[in-house]
Image (cartoon, rainbow, N blue to C red):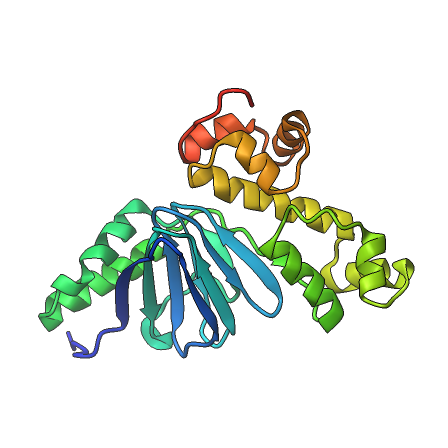
Length: 254
């Protein structure tokens, strides 16, 4: 057996400050697995927005331009796979759930400095990567600058209640042009896109432990009942059940 002395995988644990962390747009020569261990991680590429609640990971293939935002006090892990390592999770960016055993192996990877043991640990990690759970694609974003400015603003403030008429006026186009161009570039109507963004943000906040009522307000719902109904339609469960399964519950009304 020939042992490559150079690691094929590098893994680093990061703990963000009370202000969170942001990495501007950049690109890697290696594949990256970005794991949200305790709180949310958001990745924005030129084509989509990806929101990873705690306990999930974002797979970013080599060569994809991306920016990363991590929630305050987030324990997260960055693992880079050399292109020839044999990691074949996906050819595109996806949010996925990796096996808990893979998390354990990656957390201990730095201990294996002796080449033969390191090679075995890396091979085991690569094998486990193939057992990752269902993947979710990101929320598509438009490429036209004036439309991208709208989606960027909504990602930053999902509770923004400006109507499509207001957004069109601020973009200096007609409502018809705005809605038609948005649908052409994203494959979704503007209202559906905004609703999906709000619910994905809500899932992320609930997984982080934010109480249900506060989550509803933060993503733009005026009533808890409306939020609960929309959330159940999207996920099949109530916000409270989702929080109990993925985070912590601090509000029993929904």
